[in-house]
Image (cartoon, rainbow, N blue to C red; front, side, top):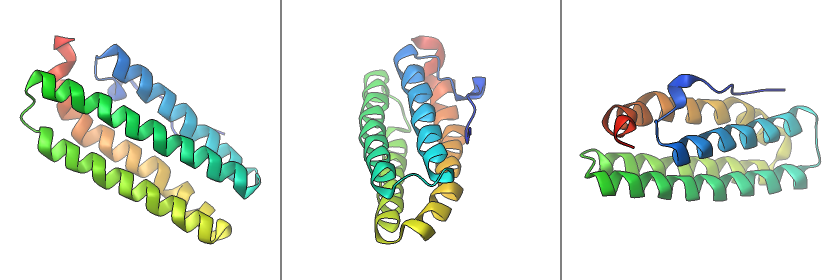
Length: 133
């Protein structure tokens, strides 16, 4: 089952970043599918660890592009990245402590944090950088 579908509005116009956005959506959909099909908690935890690592790497790529372009909102965007990573880590901890309630929280939160970041910070980043790469 799909939690997040790719939308054109998710594109920054930077091929490497857009590719990673698509990959992250795929990983989120995979873990979501595992959760709704009641996969073993260890499998879900492994998927979440992979997502966390991929998101960390992706944020580093975005931040490099922002620094190289002298992006004026770099500090705020970087802070948002750090908050999102904290949220993912908190969701992972909740799931590890109690997989049943953790599944519910993850199903509600995974789509929200990704979509909100795309529609706010990444939308502004696209406006600044998208046409220049």
